[in-house]
Image (tube, rainbow, N blue to C red):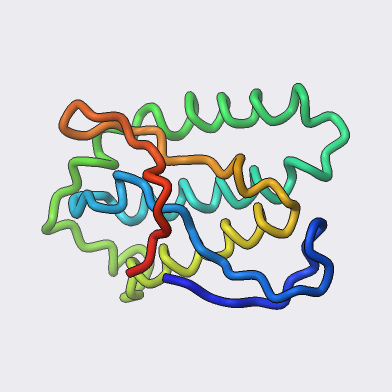
Length: 143
């Protein structure tokens, strides 16, 4: 999963930038609920897009992350990593290719952080599976 875009980057003005989402251990977990994963990446996009421009980010960013985690993720963490393979969301969301949708949103997330020059602050999915906490591997999530 890689794309090249001409983006207005704060560090590399008018240079083509490879959009390479960092690989996480969670990427290898085939039992991830794609709907919750998509909501996570949408949250990460908003977090990354608003982080740098917000002049009050020193107090805003951690509060926003905690509120999202406590109010939305906490009740869904178990379901996120233990999805029922027979769940069909087609009735609710339509018959979209959810994996492709998630991967495209993730590219947007990486582009948002890259554009602002804060790629190193890109959030990782906060759940554990098989008693191992998710973390970035340092590799690029190419699939």
